[in-house]
Picture 1 (cartoon, one colour):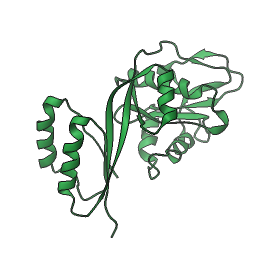
Picture 2 (tube, rainbow, N blue to C red):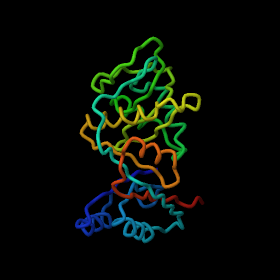
Picture 3 (tube, rainbow, N blue to C red):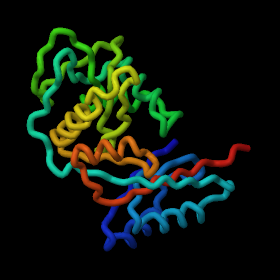
Picture 4 (cartoon, rainbow, N blue to C red):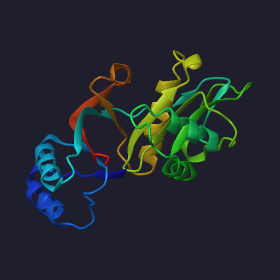
Length: 228
């Protein structure tokens, strides 16, 4: 599936739509998704997708809230007996296989993110004391090790794929990972932000507890071609 990300100010909509309508870079015959379209682009791009559709495709919309950290925690503390590490290969495969919103995702792009030190996990490290998380000097987990919780900075800068193993929930590991990954995104020049679907109550509540604020709405538009 092809992945597209389009964003602009309202004053730039005409220029963007003209470019989308004339470009040869988009393959309208394949399955694709536009991520987090702002309201001022949604209907226009939906109309363009419908106009270019000759296969009776299925178009699905998924509204999201886009959150940004109102304040970035300066000192992220890791509790004793666990450490935050760059995901190893087993951790990446675990993260991708448990991604409930994209069940057909392949691991290769996320293995590359891990190699670029953008995918993090919380791992058991018995005997380690409470410590500050140094985003600039994170260890890399072994390729056979499985994390207790995991998350990544995605290709376009938002935080996603966060999950905590069922046996390790309610320990604050998700909150810890979000704060550390947001600092990682900031270190790489991104504005730390995350998206939560309207029905994802758990994520929305967690963002609220951390003091993250909704800045705008963004809708994912998925187009799937009808199989012949």
